Every structure is written in C-alpha cells, then in structure tokens.
Length: 217
Image: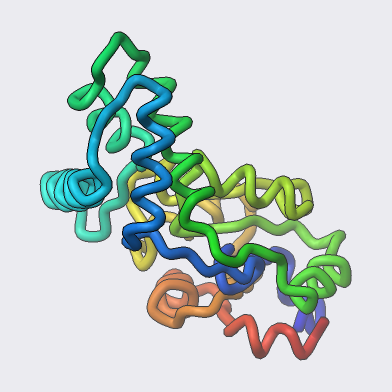
C-alpha cells in the first residue's frame, strides 16, 4: 500500500471503516429511553414530540447554515430542547452535552472495531495518520477512546467541530495542512466513494476503499 515510499501519510474515515456500528436513532424505544432519562434531569417531553422536535431543529439548523454540506453540533440541539421543556431550573449547556451522550447510548445496537482495521493500524503504526469523519465530537471521541483507537492517530478531525461535513473537501484540506505533506504523499481510506474517495482525489490525493486496504493488513 505504501509502495516505494510514495505515501507518507494516511487519512482514515471512522464509522464503517475503523468502527463497525449500528444505531437506531428514530425508533420509539430510543426516544422513550431518552424521554424517561430527561424526566430525572428536569425536562418533561413525550417521546414522539422529542423525536419531532429534534428532527425539525436539525432541519432548520442545517437549512440556515449557508453551507453546501453543513453539519450541526447535536449537543446544541438538545440544549434548546431541554431549555424549552424544563419544569425546573437546569443548565442547558451541560444538559445538552449529557443528553447527546444518553441519546447515543440509547440508540446503539452495535459498536466495535474492525479487527482487520486494527491490524492495518498496527502494521502502519509509524506512519503519520489522522481521522476525517462525519461525526459528533461529543460522543465519537469517547467511542474512539474506549475502543483504543483515538491515541493511534496524530489528530482527529470531526465534522461537528467545523460545522461542515464530507463530501466538502475542506475537511481533507485541513487534514493535509496539519499533516504537512503534499497531496500525492497522502492516502485517504474509507467506505464511501462520495465522501472518502472523490473529495481527496479532487485535491490530488490518493484514495482507496477500506476493503481494498484490508488486503494490505
């Protein structure tokens, strides 16, 4: 994969590349769990209304962003919902963060690292590398940490930090600048051509599907 020393840096996607994940964020069960938890935090909102409030606030935030490929910070959405439905005094900022984490916990059905990706990271452990992911920092960083992935990378770029998401090539440009390498010296690896292959290629970088990369593990 790193033939002839041409490739000097690696960019990885996160979910379905490093982490095998399955979530069910829209189910009534997920929203019932979150609604019950919120009752004990000073917020009263029925599960169906919680789901709809969340959906419409996300749509509104994305629509007013002015970006072609916008992203949100989920904790800000939940902070608004909590503030609007509180039955006692709360700290919306703190509760928004904790609600985002609880929402994720309620929705997770599967979360584990791909063994072949772990072998790939180990094989190229001395090569500078980073993650560029459409992800929410508020819970994705913790997932990377408890799967022992976070510290295997020089840095991690998440879409929520920049309020834009792939396929916006600017995220890859940020990664390229931080790696301090030329485009042709970097290989992007991911599972979605529209997000992980074409955008870095548009900047002159190399790109490869994760299943192809696994052959080099």
